[in-house]
View (tube, rainbow, N blue to C red):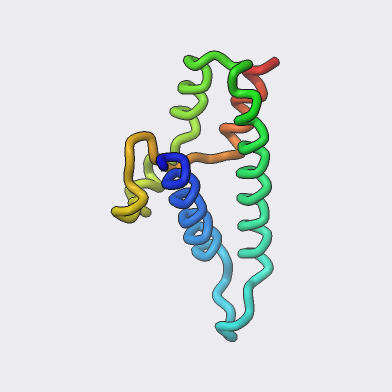
Length: 108
């Protein structure tokens, strides 16, 4: 259950962050290209993270925890707190690109 809370919290934040950085459109039915690019980048990094999870046993637990703490978005969690149903132990926002890079660097 925690993983789903973690995944949905990060996805909700990605929508928020991408929507915040994209210019508003005069037509509410039009999705701005900046938003699409931003969200596609998030999805690509999350997908890469999911593939790395299969190899997590090759990386020691201490290194995994260090990577997670280095990539947590603590300030973003204050700005965008988790909804009640998404709160749980170990549920937080992370920068998946930095986390992927950290894990891949540790695996070498």
